[in-house]
Length: 95
Image 1 (cartoon, rainbow, N blue to C red):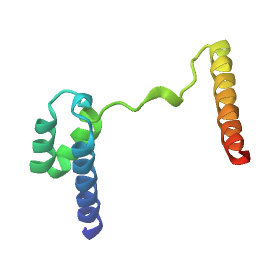
Image 2: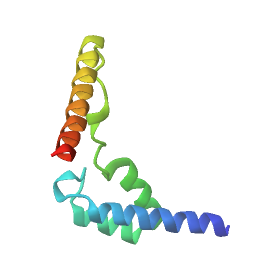
Image 3: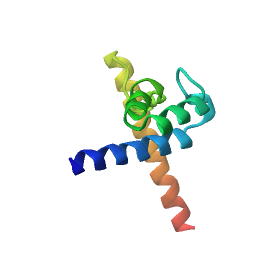
């Protein structure tokens, strides 16, 4: 029983901290103040609600497109950018 209470407390603290640090324009379904009140006053239920319907969606920047040709193009662009980044650091070290 103690483990469940500890888990609920840690979940509540993490969700409350996440809600506080989320930018004002990224909240879903309610304002920042609304979510903070819900998570604060309803610790377990509010935390689950925050995770399910309040938290902003993750950034899809790391995902590749579904089309194989587009995915290959994006992969090559990322590889080239990484190569240029590495070359840039080596160029500064040699000066």
